[in-house]
Image (cartoon, rainbow, N blue to C red):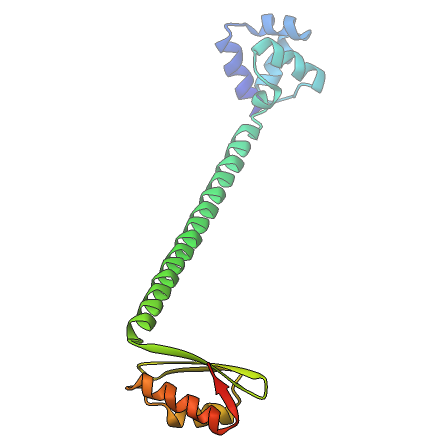
Length: 182
């Protein structure tokens, strides 16, 4: 309470009630009434008391502004810490997925290149339409611009164990269908 605080601060400054009363322009009895919590100073008197006792009005009135501010700062720091932890976790998960993707990409490319032991490409034409045919061991077959029917016909004549023979079969297929191969 204000009276207890006033008494404690007055004694700390080594002032009597009369001395403090002179500085605040009130009587010793008024100081006594304030200290006994029988009356309270007006705002102008609070300013003078604050100055005489070298404390802020908030401290004199035990306003907990400082502790409220400290609590708000502390809560803000806690929230910032939580946000940083969340962002770090998201970053770590992102990096892990990125590493997994890179490893999968490398493994996929290595697997594709190691499985195709031998391959060949030929370019054939029928009625000015060009077809690029790629084939390789392990059943690799790709025909750009080929219709489903041509794809099916070519796959029937391809022997993936004999690439050179398959190229000759493809060239013969195009000749039989009035086409040419390079």
